[in-house]
Length: 165
Image (cartoon, rainbow, N blue to C red):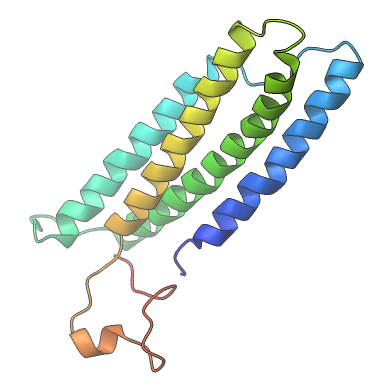
């Protein structure tokens, strides 16, 4: 498996920000409600983040030498996939709500946004925390190199490649 590229996370956030901005324009012109997730979604996001973090801490403790029980390689692989999915989903949510925020800030000159603005900011914060936890847990799953010289590729870079627990 490859590590998450920050450029992909940024591209996802930018593309979904544009889509969120366009969706907010269409819904505002059509008299529809703002396309923002309800605050109850934060509970689901929180549960996903806690679950990902707990699994990641199990893998990290095994990686750091606490090996009373063997680590199931399928569990480690699933933890890595969950961490990467968490980071990608967080980038998607962050971008979507950032696009809505841009349009809502423009509308503030005409009307107060109040609760919608707080909802958008809360969802952006939740998306950012999802990205951070996903990247942290992905790092927890990475095995340290056994031989320092073997960690570097022929061109001298170590980014994008690596072994996982």
